[in-house]
Amino acid sequence: MSIKKRLLSAALALTLGASLLTGCSKGADGSGSQSSSGDSSSDVQAMDLTDVTDPYLATAGIAGDTVVGTVGDYEVTADSLLYWLNYNINYTKQQYSAYGISDMRWDETSEDGTTTAQALLKTAMQLASFYRLLPELAAKEGLSVPQETIDGLKDDEASITQQLGSETLKDHYFWMQMLTPALYQKMYQAGEASQLLQDEYFGEGTQGYPTDAEVKTYAEDELGYYRAKHILLLTKDMSKTVTNDDGTTGYAPLDDETIAQKKAKADELLQQLRASDDPVALFDQLMNENSEDTGLAANPDGYTTSKGAMVPEFEQAALALKEGEISDVVESDYGYHIILRLPLDLDQFRSQLIGDKMEQQSNQWLEEYGVKTNEVYDQIDPQAFWEKAQSLTLGAKNEIQAVMDAKTAEDSSSSADGSASTGTAGSSSSGS
Image (cartoon, rainbow, N blue to C red; front, side):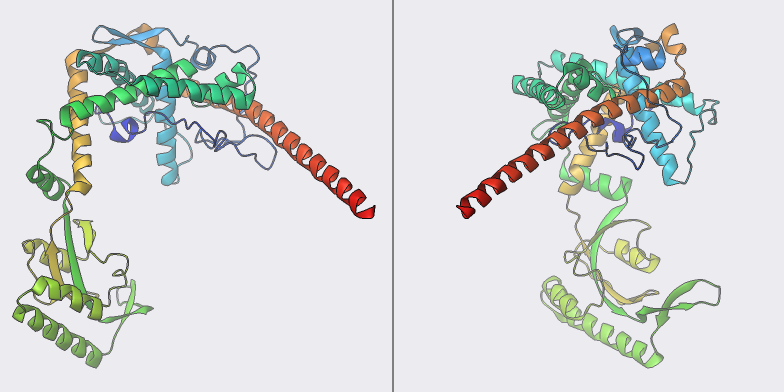
């Protein structure tokens, strides 16, 4: 199974710093919301965390340090697996929600007979294995995470403890994302190791660094991107809509005489360009003076777009041009276009290509080392785990919200007392 870039690019869903409780606003009933969990179901009951010492044992019945499999000779433990399982379920629910689906389809099967629950768990194991492997791979290359980064993580943790007032609440803060402080540090450092490895293999100056030719081929042929600008003379009134014969709606056409004038003007502009010694320079001048494209102000340097995004007539004409060439007058449903094909800004795509190369390398590493699971892994029920994870998350949020509310109330009270004291002193002074 391919490692998803969208997951790897977001190694940690936890944000540290000033916005300690982003996503923990109180609901109308005074309870903590569940925005970070991706499920705001009102029937989730907050877990009593009084006797909970291991969030993984409380949600999956497995201690966090339990071995659930291996990648090569390296052990993968339950804490990392369950973090990624929680992340995957959360992400999938968000995708479902975008399509108006409120419930997880745990038992829905793919063509190979794998259920949604099994696929989520398998992907989580791949990710946990990859993050377990990263520090080992970096060490073999002589790469290490800078000490200042490690110290910064410790400082962040200390800051959270200070804000919340106890080590217990600090732990519960991390539990909201199915993390522990120790796992957070490991995961963060693994993410840093990934960046070090990427720079080592594909950074500027290395043999793997993509050449301009490679980036161009990747952007144009694999991703289907091209760049162009145009002079557009509209043959539609963009402020009015009409119902077409087929029942669809569209913009109202201009009258025939005006359309003919637009065509004549387009032909005239093209003649000026064909007669110019520097048609590219003249193109910008004529475009700025004459184009009726409402998107011109936002795209003065042209459109970087992919195949299928523009009207067919524009796209076909643009793709038929070489870079620096200017088209004849092209008619589309919107009006008359004169198109200038432009070179892509390759720097926009180089980092994406490097990311793709790193993903391919990552999948290759997993294949080479091999991922194996054991009987503990087989016992994990993603749906049951998720339901308890929701309960634990809500319990932690409610605890932390209560502390933050108390701090806010205390600060407000102190501020009010200070204002009253100042006001009294002021009144006394003015009355004397």
